[in-house]
Amino acid sequence: MRIIFFGSAHFGTLALKALIKSRHELVCVVTQPDKQKGRHLQLAATDVKNTALASGLKIFQPENINSKESEELLHSLDADIFVIAAYGQILSQKILDIPKIMPVNIHASLLPRYRGAAPINWSIINGDKKTGVTIMYVTRKMDSGPIIMQKEVRIEDKDTAVSLEEKLSICGAGLLMEALAIIDSRNYRLVEQDEEKVIYAPKMKKDVGLIDWNTSAVNIHNQIKGVVPWPGAFTSYRKKLLKIFQAQVLPIFPGYKPSPGQVIRADKHGIVVACAKGFLEIKELQLEAGKRMPAQNFIIGHRLVAGEILGENK
Image 1 (cartoon, rainbow, N blue to C red):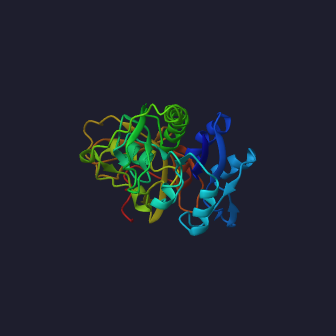
Image 2 (cartoon, rainbow, N blue to C red):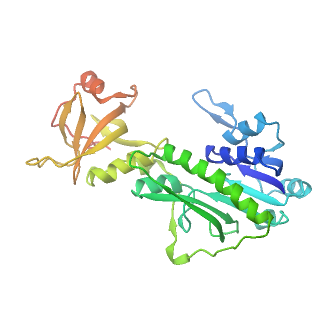
Image 3 (cartoon, helix red, strand yellow):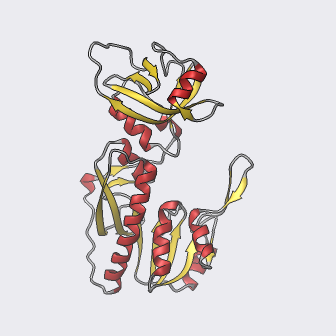
């Protein structure tokens, strides 16, 4: 089959590599335009573009995928299938109608759970024990198309949004190949999603990373793991922004009745902070304008002591 691949984020790179190695004809890779990044605002290509360049593939980077120019080019490529994986633009119905067979999407959740831009992050933040990948027929309404195939993936306690993305991208690449095989043989079935079970996964915003110590240690731990690499989990310390990168939940300390956010221990093992329920031991952190460092180094450098409060000056 002749395939056009749409993708930008790292999540889609393994699926693209699988297509490159497959028997299918990859006629074009569509990805977002290069964007300025970093302190010096240098132009940087998407992960998908870099993968496509390495294989000498035709690349198309429209500012607007739904423009007349885009429509004409995509029509001219005479594709059987569109494969979409974290592309970053919403395709119009005119564009979705172009492939001869269908447009399919690789989505990083078990739909209808977590429709939207950040399914991986929200599955970690919400403390889920499993998630998965869905291959679906793409319709105009976001992530609402009928399901072609799904596969479950277990979420380990040590997983972050970054490690889970890698697991799901591996799963997605394999599942895509299975789905294309049954589509090519016309041996597939489209299963409509149950609208009563829909849960949304909105795009990450900076305030999602703000820690509320008036919640449980388990919830905060999940938040820390779920908001990497952006926006990252943060609180305040001595009127400065304090980022927290690694932590672990500790058992209840009998006899302690501290205020949420209060440091109850600061030693070589870490910084133990009281939450509304349970205690969190911070292992790695970074103060505004400072360096990322282990808790032990932070304690020495900033003379943090038990009794201080985190989060008072947001």
